[in-house]
Structure formats: C-alpha cells, structure tokens
Length: 279
Image (cartoon, rainbow, N blue to C red; front, side, top):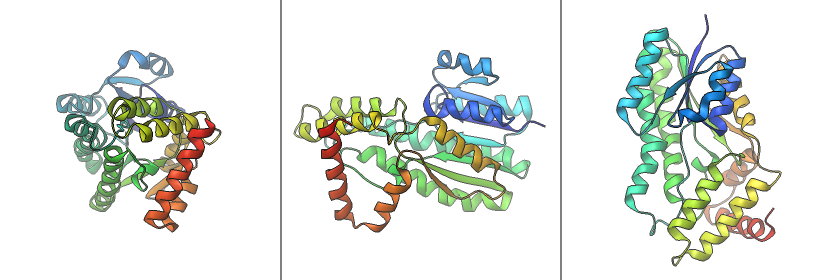
C-alpha cells in the first residue's frame, strides 16, 4: 500500500523538490499550494494537486477532507509553506506581521490539528515542520520572521510529546542558505518597509548580504533539504531535528557556543563582508 503525503508550499523551492523526492520513494503525494498553475510539471510526474491556502481555514479543511475521502489515511504532513517578511520592527505594519504569523505558524498549526485524527486512528505518521536556522539565531531587520520560526520550534517540541503515545513523529527541519525564491522575497520586503527610513543603511546592507548569500557557494539547492526530509521519513526512530544545507550546522554551532553579544558581532561582521564582496 502506498503511503500518503501532503506537502504544502509545493509550487517551488523546497516544497517542489520534496514532492519529487517522495514520489521516487513510492508515496502518493498531494502537492498543495495557492499557485496551482505552477505545479503542472508535478502533476505530470505523478503528484495530485490541491489548491491550498494556509491562511484560509476552509481551504485547509477541504484539502484534508479530500485526502481522507480518497485514501482514508495520511502518513506524512510536510508543513513547508512559509516566507520571510523583513524590515525593522518599527517600520513593518502590524497587518503584515499578522500575515507572517498566519502563514508561518497558524497555518502549520491548523493543518497539524486537521491531520492528527487520521494519523492517530492509524496509530502512526509523521508531521514534518520546516523551520530554519532562523528558529535558533537572530539578525537585524528579521524580528517577525525569526519570531515565527522560534514559535514553530517550541510548538514542535510540545506537539512531539503530545503525539508520541500515538506513534506519531514530529520532526523539525532547519535549513540554512538554500537557493530558492525566499531570498528575493525577503530582500524585497526589507527594502519596501525599511529601504527609505531611519534603517535604510542597515536595510541596504542586509539586502546586499542576502543577494551575496544566494550567489555564493554556501547556498545549497533545495534538493538537499528534500533528501533530508525523505531520510527522516524513512527512519524508524527519526531525530527530533535535522539541520541541513547552506552552512546550517556551522552557524548553529556558532550560536550554541557564542554569547548573545558575541553572535551580534559575528552577524554584523558577516553582513559587512558579504555585502561588500557581493559574493
């Protein structure tokens, strides 16, 4: 019997790569995203497409209902949908801050709520939450984004303990620098909100750093993260966390063993060097 998976944010980047990888592993994969038209190649590869907006409750309910009616089971939920909203806390409108939480936290939590009954009934399954190294470290102009990723880290720890008695694994994936649309979206929002304010010098420098990171050899292709997810799902007893790609392990090690102000200094130094070199 084919295992069944739902991958959110599947129209590009990590989500798209994960759909393709799980198809290779024999999963019946539902690819969910708002931009269904961008997933036609996934349909040709064998995926089942779902119009899914993680900010709309009816959309999420309909997606899970479709999977329940079609298969009566869900073995893996990969909560990948998310984006990076950047800008100084003073500058970012509260409506945008709320949307950042709606997409990155509340959509993930609601889908987990909806998927859990099926997994509990079948006495097994896995919820894979894509956070970021940003859930354990910090940088200027990223307050709302990092707040969402810190939140998902804590939510996942609690959920893991709640669902363990039912044989359901909760796995956190912490990508580093990955070559996706994420960097461009984060740069755009940073310059939109803070590119012409009191924080403009920081915003322009940090935007150049993001651009440099995207072009550097440090950034990994999304397939690296997809392979990590597939490996975690194959494991009989998966780890609770997987740092993967783009300098993730190195940066998290530096954060673990560096004081708060020491890490502030490291981030500022990295920002200046990457912004200055453009590499």
